[in-house]
Length: 166
Image (cartoon, rainbow, N blue to C red):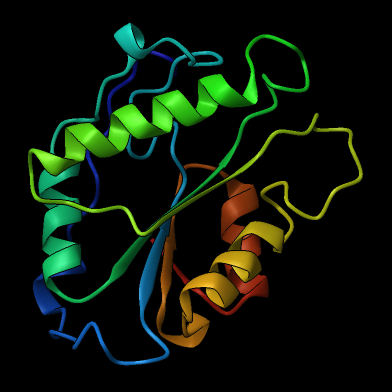
């Protein structure tokens, strides 16, 4: 699956209603990072290995133009495994955001869990910590928001939080 390319589903994008960005609480789409926005690569940490899945920047632009906040939630256990540092994750996210600026796309929030999968934390995807934190930080109405990703864990989490999963 590491080299398998996926395109972001746009089936629901056709029927989006424009929203005033000053409206509070706001709608958001939560994205897993690896395998959803960017090509899946084991423990990605080098900027030169960064690559968007084809069509992602354009799909993000459509969502943003429709009034959705764009929020990335990602597990980065490579930090706990000492494959790379928190600073490395921040640099990669900064690079991703700079690349998206070429498409006039702004990511409203990026949340990541640096812990090992066996750690007892509330932030690892599968648990609601990152999404609840983002909802609080960005004044997001979870009942009007969506989540997308490639894992069954995310599907279960979206059901727990009453988010629409696609």
